[in-house]
Image (tube, rainbow, N blue to C red; front, side, top):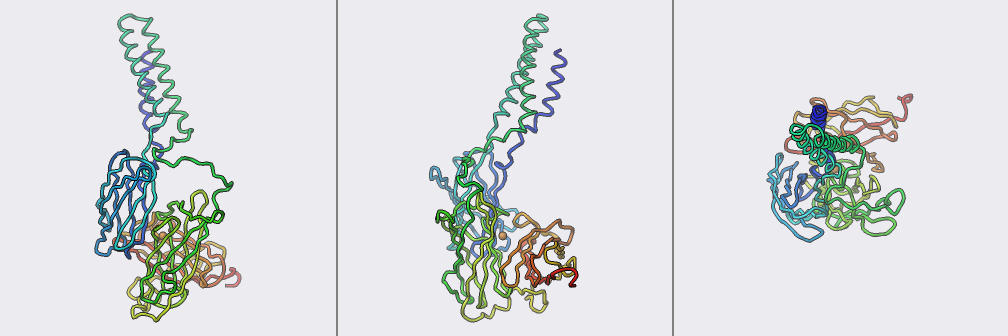
Length: 436
Ligand SMILES: [Cu+2]
């Protein structure tokens, strides 16, 4: 009997480890893309396992402008305690700044570079041992103690108390084994510091955001720096919307293009106030510009907001350096020229087409993906965004379904060792296969 119990204990112990490895979210890194001081950055907050303890913050620069120094500050919303440091952005393997945080729960990360300031809300989470873990390890502990007791008593007295203790050990083992078997089916314990779960008042989630885009000053001059501001308002309450969730490593992905497509910027505005996002830009040519913003509100879903603004004045001498909408080598101003391979050669509206581009070795993930494809209809009423579908050496492949026939402006983006490459091209889409 005791021999059988020993064997069971060994078997169960050998399989016990995976039960504790759930709820990876608490230990995961948080990555936030930000366009600050004219630089495209990803701020990394490393997942932490203990609090109070150090929170490690690093900054990756994709377009390094003389290694920008970013002032970082972490403030606990609950007790107001603030810790400060400086992070030096690096193209890869950033040096992590350690800020000692005192508690879990809601915090604000403040980033300062030049005269720009962003405040990003986040939560410090630490995984909490579940009741299941307690029962598993408790069960094994009790079983182990009784087993040892049983062996000793059995050796000394034969029968009687030894048998009783062996029975207790079996009960302890049974509890542990039952929990191991059934625990994966139970919901994981919330992490320490997680937001309390609140029942949503509105069935079907929170309403979509109403967004208003404005340039400051209202009509910037060509060549002059201006602020593009997005104000987000809840349609039913009229209050600022401040519950954006990070998706693809950003609160908002904003694409700003000139109407003719020669100007293209994919930026990640800073949260400067609740419900307010801002980014500094400069455009070298006058005309109408379009802003498309992809965002995701908590308990609401992803949506696309758009707006437009006008640049006044005269084209600057640098205007020619803006990225062209076509892959005309003479107009590319030193940027890589792309001629993507399309399948079918003329894509059909409403059907998936494959777009394949050459890419250099050493493409590294940006916004969680190896490649991004942004597609705009010529009039700007449509903007699509897809990710690469499996990168083989030296090429990026995208699948895209163009909604309507007509001409589209497209930009493929990927990150190499030291910068983000934007490859512009145009695609003509036909109405149906029979018309080709
Ligand atoms: Cu983005």
